[in-house]
Amino acid sequence: MLSVNVSARQFRLPNLTEEIFGTLEKTGLDPRHLKLEITESVMVHDALAIAALRKLKNSGIELAMDDFGTGYSNLSYVKRLPINTLKIDRTYVSGLGTHTEDTAIVHATVAFAEALGLKIVAEGIETTEQLTLLRELGCELGQGYHFSEPLPGAAIGTLLREGVPT
Image (cartoon, rainbow, N blue to C red):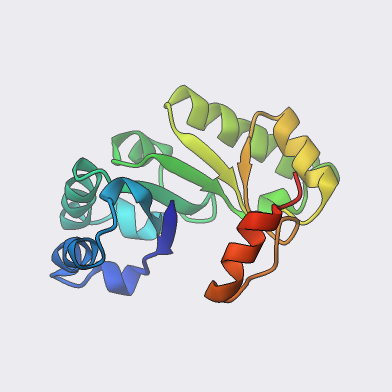
C-alpha cells in the first residue's frame, strides 16, 4: 500500500481527481494499492471535496482521515465521509499511559472507528510501551520512530527485507 498525504491546498485544485487517475494509469499502480491521507479540514466543509472523495473511493483508492481529533469537525461528519481509515494523531499517542485524558481519547477513538467499520492507525509511536498500550486498546496498526525513522526511497527495500520492530 502506497500512502500519500494530500494537502488542503492540493485538494482544492480543480483537476486533482483527474491528475490522480492519470498518474495511476501512467504508473500502472492498481488504485487498491493507493491510500490518500487527508486532514479533517479538507473533508468536512466542502461538498465538492466530498464528491471528489466519493469518486476516488469508488475507484478503489483507500482514504484516510489524517490527524484525527486535532481539527474542529463534528463527529457526525465522520459517518458521512467516504473514508476507510482514521489516523490517531501523535499528540494523543505520546501521552498514552501517562495522561489519562490521552489514553481515554485513544480508547474512545478506537471504539468509535471499530463501531463504524473503519481501520484505525496510531501515528507517532516511539516506544514499546506505547505500542503495547495501543494493542491493548485494540489498535493494531501504527507508524512512528519505533518502527523506523524517515528513510530515502532507496532504503525502503532494505527495511522491508530486514523487518521492523513488532
